[in-house]
Image (cartoon, rainbow, N blue to C red; front, side, top):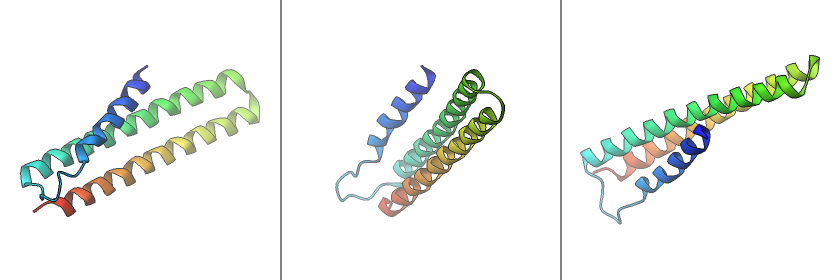
Length: 102
């Protein structure tokens, strides 16, 4: 449930980055959008951690031995990938904000 709410919040917040026509952003608008981007990034990282915990628990319940270790390793790799994707998205959003600022 928490993961679902975090995903919904992250999805809905991307509308804040829509272009306001051709008008450049003011410094305060850019600062606000950067703050929102950082909050989204942190939420996405926490979501990746929560998904990792769920995947790891599934591995413990459904597998054993070497298969369980491989499953946990895959869950950790997926969490790393999710965090990397969140970081790249945050950097791209900040670059877009910087490009749209006066």
